[in-house]
Every structure is written in structure tokens, then in C-alpha cells.
Length: 256
Image (cartoon, rainbow, N blue to C red; front, top):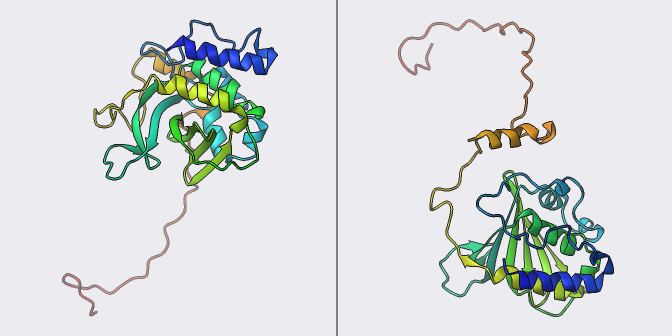
């Protein structure tokens, strides 16, 4: 990860809020904002158990969207743009999928959490006379469900996609923060390679090693992917009496 952009963003937040000066994000300066291939990033960070979105957002986006952000097990980053006429490549929400900017590490999630989702001062109720300029999408995956968050710069805004719900929030007051985040992540985009095309996606997870078993074991019962369904057998009910029918001969005979 290019630390220049991240340090610039942290300096910007410190200037806006002196409380960030001592411990801006609670992460080490050497932490990468992307999950390494060897890191164990399957389990959501501990802070995701608590409410993660600001009061401004929680009053405007669907509860399901906030839940996916709060409890995300993975967060993927994509670079996007408007699809040109005749575009036949991959799309996401009818936008051209230009590339992948990786998987966010816990440090990257913390940066977005503190600077964007928990920051009421980032947003405005007013309407701006501008057109959304799509740059990056962060996909917050919670089980089989997900919420996509589109970052626009310029015309700084966040658009939340979940099922048929599309909510756009004006983020003009936080323009400098949005611009830095977009610049940092989109600058590291690589060509998108479809995992499905490469056979790297599965419909249902399996514990393949001891670490996987530990992740599933530590999950709260209410969050466990396998439920203990009611196995109680119903009381024996006598079979309903069947009316005696006269015998019929042959196949499909309607006449008695």
C-alpha cells in the first residue's frame, strides 16, 4: 500500500479533529490496508460487533445495509466507471468494472470506519447540482448477503446498494477525505480477473483445516452458519381413513 496517500489522509483527519493526533486509527504505521494472502482475514474484526455507522447514516440507509457493513466477513474493493456505448466487459450495478483494488485488511476497515462511516461531519442534507462520478466500490460481504458502497469523486458522495435499495448520501463536507480515499485505493487497481471463471468460488464454505474449524467454533450460536433445527418428532397421528374405491382395470380408466 502506498503510505503517502494514507499519511496524507491521516494528517487531514488530524487537522479536522485534534483527537486523532494521539492515535488516529489505532493501527501501526506499518500496517497495510489490504489483506495479505497469508493473513487470516476470514473472521470479521472485533469492532464489527458494535454499531459501526454514524447516526446520520443509520437514519438514512436500510438496516440490512448497516448490518452487512457492521458484520462484514470480507471487504473487497473495485474500481468502476460509467460504461461506454457498446461496452461488453464485466459490470457492477451497470457500471464498467475496471479493476480490483484488493481485499481490505482490518487496518483498512478501521480507516474507513473511523473516517467515513462513523463521521457525521462528512455528510450533508443539501442537494448539490452535480453528476455522480463513480470511482471505487467497497463490497461488504456478510455470508451470502452483501452491501456495496460507491465512492464518487468529484461530486463527492456515497451510494449504498442493497437488493433493490439505492441510497445516495451527499458527502460534500468531507470532500477532501473522500478524494484521498479514492486516490489511495484506485491508484492500486489491478486488472479484474473473474474468480468464477477461474473456478475459485464455492456455494458453501467447508472447514478445510484446523484454523477454519476454530473460526466456526468461536462463532456465537446466533451467528452460526449451521442451525440446530427442531428435531422433535410430532406425536403419532393415525392415518386418515380412505374411502374404498371400486376396482378399476387398465391404465388411466375413467369408467368404473
